[in-house]
Length: 130
Image 1: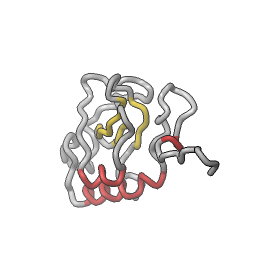
Image 2 (image 1 turned 90 degrees about the vertical axis):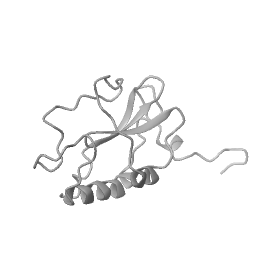
Image 3 (image 1 turned 135 degrees about the vertical axis):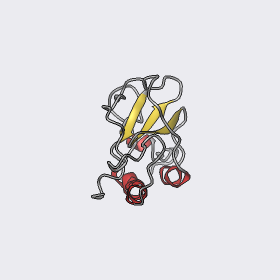
Image 4 (image 1 turned 180 degrees about the vertical axis):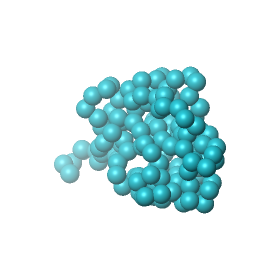
């Protein structure tokens, strides 16, 4: 690295190319594996996260379409939850001015000032063949 050039942080090296927020491609494949494992274990044990009441359907959200959209503010009627400590540790600290939330089976990176959904990790626990 040339002298005087700062090393890029994880979040800076995943900057997006559009949409206005440099963290729009924040989630990467390696982040997803331990998180999917955590949620898959919870689902298999019959433990549904808050907001996904167990109704004999494998912790599916109660019959509603995904209400949030990338690059749009999180609608006011969307219920979101803090992440469990095990998941927060895997993701690390969110970028400045952002927070992680879980909406149904998705983890979202949301801009705190605008509520804009910047990036998403969708369908938690589903990629492991739960």
